[in-house]
Image 1: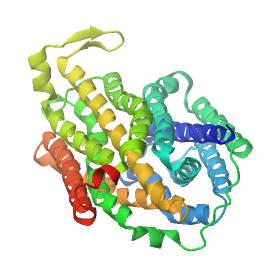
Image 2: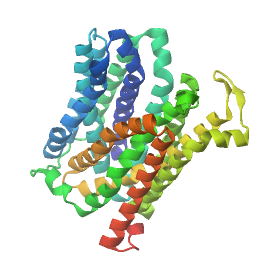
Image 3: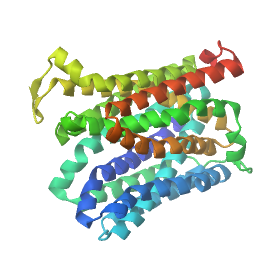
Image 4: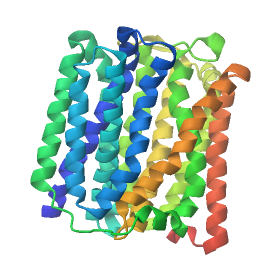
Length: 412
């Protein structure tokens, strides 16, 4: 029972950190307009977060494995609270960039270290289940933030939103300090080096590096596809409709992760990584077919708040919901696999490697997506997304078969 209570403040940490992230993402266009940012400066509003997140991975991962994870998490929660408080004082582009960088630093600590604590606290045969529950709080924050941040700003402005976030970070800090035990596991070596050469981590990396391209493209271009004009290859729906489509993926992902995590604990990590990744790729390939499918099904209807929605809207909602289901199969299994390998030898560093492997694809995919959108059409963005997910799965299955034997996937 005592161990179970230690998970609750970690769930709250995941929720409030994700709520802060999605709130800033939603309000970013408003800040750009309010501060008059253009060109490179507007780009720095986005880049500053990535810089903070990238810079923090190695030192925080090393410190959390070398010292007390709980202490590092408390520091990260304090830093996050300070960063969101600073947003209430921002009156220039420079001030926003500084606060955004601090937000990125805090996000790495609250995300990577709290996840490492969940992986440490969970038993091996319950690890993916607990990670799935932990991730479901992130998805819940995504649903609430996506649908609510803009509405709250219209009624109350910036300051009350950030005041609530600061209070929630303070509650999470008190919860971690009060309920989570100090961590007495220490790794004196630089675990990143050892784990980077781990066979199982290298194997799943062969999938993850490609899959990052797929997920980055789909998550960024799905709202673009739903919202831009028909002339540019989109559905030309309202901002509210875009929010509903985006929230659907997070909602189904939230519901599916704990259940999928339990199955992965029982039947094997690799199997669910492959099934989830393959399903994600196939659904991504189907997204450009939404207008034609909607027209053939004739599902147009009038809805409260949204008004009259074309049939393609309902197809887009269904496809994005299925994307959430597919990703819920993969994510807890993937995270648990990294936790399994890092347990006792540098679990935070293991998750740090997992994050770093994602970065190249996440940085390069938007450039490729923008090029394809302008030269070949938006449909090809989703073709690239689907293909990279499927090639990632094929590579993963090939490496597992080569190294461990074709029958080992179910036990991998």
